[in-house]
Length: 131
Image (cartoon, rainbow, N blue to C red; front, side, top):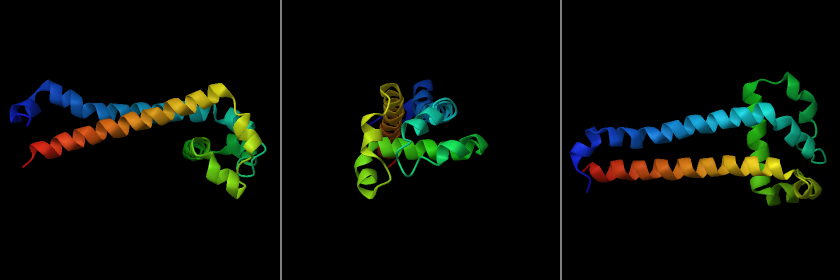
């Protein structure tokens, strides 16, 4: 067990603050991707039924719509199988998706994994110390 005095130290404060800082970094990176690379991602998916019409209207959309579009592209590139089977994505687009964009999406996905693992560990530590 962790001593109760540990939770009043700076180390505990930093450990509990890290998930929030990681969350801010995730949101900032998503904002960067949605503003800098989203148009390029949508153009790389031009044969896909679900994404081809978004490219033209992208410049008229706000920040929230950019986030939603980025999440849709991330999800489609993370698990392309169901979208290809339903006809939303073209398998050619998946095969020809630029590697540097795929790398950026992979980084973003790993940031989510790190945030979830760290947050789960902190939650478990807090639950273990409370009786």
